[in-house]
Image (tube, rainbow, N blue to C red; front, top):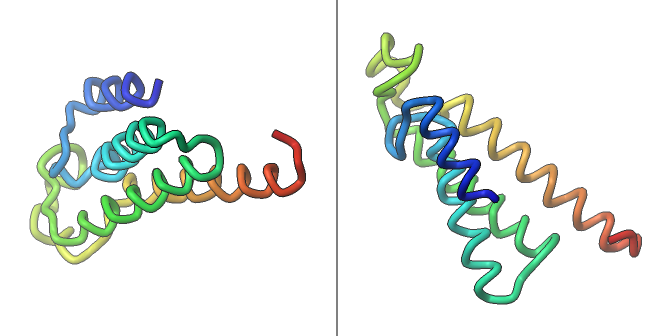
Length: 109
């Protein structure tokens, strides 16, 4: 499901990794979810792995120049700043991971 979502985001946004877009955080998160499933992780642990991977992807956007979207008009002015879409993806995944952890603690799976 996450891989299909990533594919659709890439298609609709006409973006790929390295374009300084939300895909830069989403793609590593999807890969982390895949690896977590392969290693038998699920729920909070898998979501935490995805959030950590998204953080790395988000942080990588600092050194990038936008190649598509509205930010491309600013070209090098965006270098040195985190992409807002990547930051948003990261925040959503961090929140999901924390909520899943809290639900797990409460025994409400």
